[in-house]
Image (cartoon, rainbow, N blue to C red; front, side, top):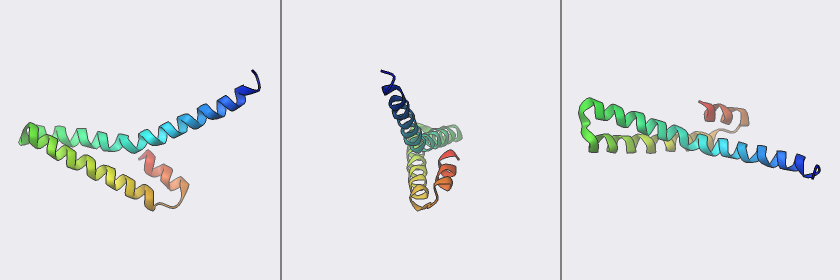
Length: 84
């Protein structure tokens, strides 16, 4: 049983690293989507206008983030893109 512990530790760390990077890809577009949608709603766009503006903002943020991650060559710079 003790021989499986180090292997399990590495698997768990790898899983959480994968989960962190996967969620980081989707967290920014969702945040931008909600914030821009609320801003549009409160400026008088209405419910449908806020949803439409939020959808466009979320799609743009997702596209820009994917493009930034695809074009950056260095791993440390990709980490900075993911963090910010």
